[in-house]
Image (cartoon, rainbow, N blue to C red; front, side):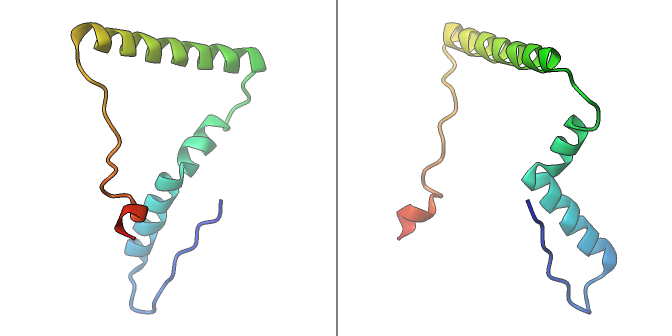
Length: 83
């Protein structure tokens, strides 16, 4: 994960920092750093992932019961379709 930003002499530092911050968020770097800030035991990690799966499953089941369709991926913006 390397993030590179092209800087011109006319660029203001606050705009460059804002672009850098947005790129870090887009890459998921901030989330990863926060997650790895403290040591997490393997059993705690497994439990957290298990609970995350359970919540996702319950959400899907409730959506199926209420009849709300799940979101579909937008394929019109695919770069390959324009070729």
